[in-house]
Each structure stands twice: as structure tokens, then as C-alpha cells.
Length: 347
Length: 252
Image (cartoon, rainbow over all chains, first blue to last red; front, side, top):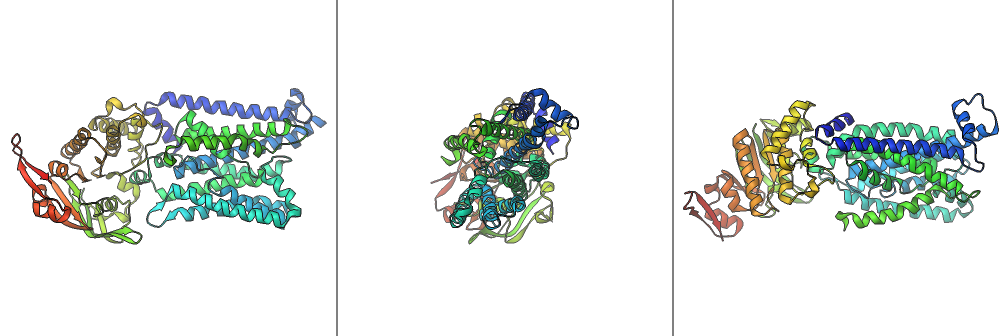
């Protein structure tokens, strides 16, 4: 399906746009690699590039402290950042695509709040079970996503994007209230919740990477399968249906894949805000509305943003760490307001 | 291909709209669907386009119920121009029209030919590389008409395609429908608000009144002064255009 979309745009005389998309995607890929390298070099001790290179290329021959730091601490953490950013950005592309709403993002439609509540429950009620955190956050995110879908669905009429966003606001409010209630009730255990909720990648290891990776792969495959249909969905529900697209099925499938992606990201990194909103928008401006180009571009752009956010988070005020989620929220919040201001349909 | 809606009842939640309405569109026919606000014109069109599920009755495409056909199979035969659809930002006219090929299998040569031809019919070839957002309302409607034509349909349904256009673009779009019908033998069903334009361009008129068909026939018979008075609550008469010798409906 993605191949069809790409080749169509060539026939459409949109050749320059395809070339530009390829350039943008390549640039994002370079940014990810550079971000990864810088993440391996900088930290509490700055390692020489040669040592980093040796640790990555020939792990068996390197047994010194430098390669220990790279291989056991910095590399897994940076890779977790890559896939968390990728998941959140692609989830944002999917949500904005299937809901045809520029403001849709994991934290807008309740997915983030669902993951947050589920994780809080685990953290305060079963603090001895850290391994339950990831699956719980994923399940919570998906349930919240389905509830919002249920709210916005009218039998015989379908799903309305505006109802979905408003439903997301309501569900987020309720879930947030329960989360706050739990935090107040279990105030002695609140420290771990606060650390997790602020969205930090501190201490993330290979185990976290293996938790998120399968979801990233499955999510990217799902997104690729949906790319062409999401292109057509931008023409409106009725137009898409008249062109043979099963509108509700596409929307439901897109929502589920977005929950997979965002839920798994939340489960390993907590609440990292706004990557799912900001990254798809910036890249849509650069590569256009075709999902065959937008999905890979946003995936790499999200990965790059998250890696750099984490790099700044752990080096800017060293030895103290700012949670990466704080940085992304500081960038994303004002951008969200800018979008609200710009968006014609809600003015 | 013949499209027939038979004895349709349909509505939205607690609001019933259609009570046993039906219409049949044969190949090469141009059928205007008119009626006062809330009479069920758009709902009937949406039911026929399989965009709205009826509670009773059946829609048949060459005798086969469309509820049993695959969505894409319908889309290869039946093109629809719905009302009030968003204009995606960043798309060019040509890219929009290319979406009309989505229901068909991939065949670059046939696709290109269908796209070129559709652009030509809608008189959009010279604007094909413009962005949709940079077009006027009339040009945008013509672009959407071109997309529907690129589907290479046997039937075309349009929901108030001229509602928000100025008179020149209204006439343009209606003239295009007439030529598509004649040139390609496509059956066309079009919901129109303007009685006088419907009378002028549609050889056959279906008048809906409170969810039922009040009249169905040649324009001058269906839109009789008595019926127009009863259904629309206005006086009307038919004059003869001294230039063309054709009957012209005048309301009010």
C-alpha cells in the first residue's frame, strides 16, 4: 500500500516533493545517529570518541570501564530514548490521521492518562512489582483509548473527531483525578510515582529496550498498512467511504496501533509529553500529507527529538537530572497553543 | 448500470426522515432530487450511496442489493460527491483527482488516462498543479467532480454540488453533469435546492415531501404549479423563453 502511494505521487508530477521528503527523512536519520553518538560520548565523564567507537564496534575486546559505561549504561538508555520517541511520534501521526484532527495526540485523547493511572496503581499498591509496570501502563492506555473511542462512536453515524477529542478531555480529567487521589492517599509512596510521571529515561537498560522494541516493530508495520487509507481519509469520511475505504474499521485499527505504540512508550519512559503532537506537525510541514513519507519522517524525527531531549536532560544540570518529559513539555506546550491559534476548525 | 432505491425508511437516532421513499436511476439519466429543507433529499442520496444504513427497504445496483456488495466493488461503479467535505491542506488538484483511482487495481496507464480525461471533462487541466486550498469554491467543486469522474463510474450521485457557488459556477457544474451524462451514458442523481435550475437542467425530477416521493417524472410534469404550491408553499408558473422556445419555471 505504501509503495502505491509513493509511486502515485511521482505520477502526479509531485516529483520534487518526493525528493524533498527523501532528503528530510535522510536528515532525520542522520540526526538520530548523531544524537546516539553524542549520548554515548557525553555524561558524568566525557569519553573519547575512540573508546566509544571501540566499545560499540568490538565489544568483546573491550573490557575497560569506558566500554562498561557505553555498553551497559549509555547505549541502552539512548536506544530506549530512540524507540520511545519513535513510538510517540508515530502514534501521533496515526491519531491525527484517523481522527482527521490536528490536535489529536496520545496525551489529548486519554491514552497517556490511562497509562499513567495504571502505572500509578502498580507503583502505590504493588511497589514490589516493578515488572508489572510496563504491561499495566500499556493495558491502561489501551483501555482509555477504547473508552474514548466508545464515547465518540454513534451507531449508524460513526465516529466524530470533535467528540473524540472532547471525550479524551473528559476521560483525561477523570483518570487524572483518580491518579491524584491515589497519590494523596498513598503519600508515603508518592516519590516513585512523581519520578515516573515526569517522564524520565534515567537508568533505562536493555530490559526496557526489549520491552518497547516489539511494540515499535508491530506498530510500524500497522502504520505502514494504514498509510494509503489514511491518505484517503483526509478527504472526509463520506468521500473516503465512497472511494471504498472502510472508514470505521480504519479508524479503530489506527487507534489500536496508536495505543500499542504510545502505551509501550509510556510504560518504559513515563509521561513524556507532546512528542506525539509536535513532531508529526513539524514533519507534515516539511514532507507534506502523504503518510508513506510522513510515517518514516515522523518516526525518525521523534527518535531524534527524544534522544537530544534526554541528552540535554542528563547533561545540562549535571550531576542533577532534569526529566526529559519536562523538556519536551516546555517545547510542546507553547507549540500546542500556537497550533490552537492557527487551527481554523476550532477558531 | 441501474441504481434503484426501493421503499426506503431511514433516519438519525430518534428522528425518522424517510418513510418509504424510492427512486430508480437508469443509465444515461439525469435525475434531479428536490424538496423543501428536511424532506430527506440528502438522506435518500446517502442511503443510495451506502453512506447511511437504512432501517427498511433496499438499494439495488443492477438488481443486486448494495448491502451485500464489497465497498470497493461499489466504488468502481458508483461515484459520490458528498456535501461538506474537508479540503485537505497541501494537496494539488491532480493528487486529489488521482485518489479517484483508489478503488481500481493498479494500472498506471489506465490510471493516467482516466485522470487526464477527468481533468479535461471538469475543465481543470490548466489548474491541475494548483493546491486545493488556493482555489475558489467553484474550482474546488470542479476538482472534486473530476475526482468522482476519475473513478470511471457508471453512476454518479451528487449532494447539493452547487449550493455555495455563484451563478456562473452553478451553470458550469450543471452543464458538465449534462455533458457527462450524454457523453458517457452515466446515470446521474443530483440533489439540488434551486427549483428553477433543477427544472432547467434535469430532464427528470423527483420531488420529496416529508420523506415520501410526492412526484416523479419529466420536469414540466413533476413541477406542476399545484404540486409546487402544496410541497414548497410558493406560487409558480411556466413561461416560454422567446429565444429558445423552451418552458421556463418561474417561482414566486
